Structures are given as C-alpha cells and as structure tokens.
Image (cartoon, rainbow, N blue to C red; front, side):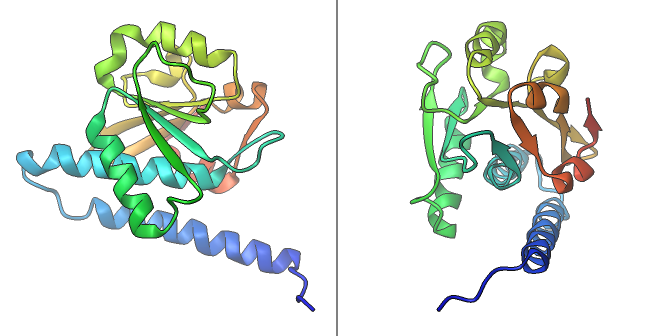
Length: 185
C-alpha cells in the first residue's frame, strides 16, 4: 500500500525545488568568465533556465512540458541536450532545432534566439495560434508579444515574464518563478 502524499509534503517538495533552482542559477554566475568563455557560459545558463522553466510552467489540459524547440542557436540546443542526458531527463523532455518556417505543432516551449530576430513577428504570429510558451533573448521580447525574456544584467541572466499573455493562453506560472523574475507584466 502506497503512503498518501499530503499537501504539506507537496508544498515542502515545491520549496526544495525552488531553492535548488535559485541556488543553481546563482552558482552558475558567481565566477565571471573571460570573454571567450562567456558566450558558451551564457548559452549554458540559458539552457539550464529553459529546462527549469519546464518545471515551473503549466499548460492547461497538458500539465507536463515535453518538448522544447529552439530556433537559431545550435549551441543552445546542444547544451539543452547535454543537460537532459546528464540529469536523466532525456526520456521526459525532448528538444528540436528548428528554423522560423518550421511546423511548431510539437513545441510547447519555443526558444527564439537573437539570430532569428528579423523573423520574430512571423514566429510570434505562428506561435500565437497555439499554447506555446515563447522564450527569447531578443531585447524587449515580452513587450513585442513574447512570453518570457532572458536578458543580461551585470553579467547575470535575468528573466522577464509576460504573465498576462500566458494567462490568456491558459498557461499558469508558479509563484516561485514569478518571484525571481526581474519584471512581470
């Protein structure tokens, strides 16, 4: 007979996961890398954030994010794949490298790199017809209709969240993630 999981146990587990997420994110950026290493390190941090976002965002009628799609940054896709293998999550979470004209039907979390900025309006339009969480490092991304933006502030990757847009799409964000966001619309 399995013991029942109580609300208190779930609440405690959520607190532990949140603290691990915050500590992990803080540890990654403690040692500022040289310029040559910084691009790789920043991409690795973004990959870590993407994977962690999947644990703190819930899509109505499909609570588990199972597929991350990436447009424009093969290095980021490689880091996501590497982290998924190292953490044993590769059987639960898949990743695909796409271009702007691809079919987004498998995507639940869609990362759009700065390299795809010229096609941003078309990509956001295509994604707007589905319950896709768009994420990008494009400047002012959430003010252009995106859901979650990454930006660098004092050599630290920060996140901004367009909570209004996500709620309209039937997507909920955990309070822990909203707390660590630099800006929430």
